[in-house]
Image (tube, rainbow, N blue to C red):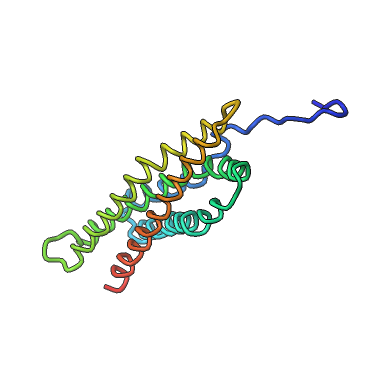
Length: 193
């Protein structure tokens, strides 16, 4: 359809489904294949790569994008959020669940949960950190992102509500970043023992 001279062409917003990061589904598929084949290398690779992508994105959002977003005016912030939110809705939960699940199976396969194993307490520290990250991510960040997405697609979005929800998410992203650094320390401990 062509626009008449002097009129502005308005394009329809892409659907949420078309904006999701579908490629991230490769990770749980690889994990399932590794579990079915009892392939330690593939399971470890899936655990490490999904963990790195999850942790890296969390740290980037919390410590780099967060401060940038605070300095943007509301309309600029809305533009960034409307592009970013749909791309994280599938990305973060899939990577988090894959990294945690693969890590659990690795600890079982390597007998790290056997009483007397010197690494057993470290597994429980990792589980506690993963629990905190998962509760914050699935219980607060994901629902807030869905609220933001819905608000952005209303005829007249409430910019203040979007900003408030996003401030909460940015603060939690910082907290998530701290816990991500802690989980890296725990994983580094596993790597040298």
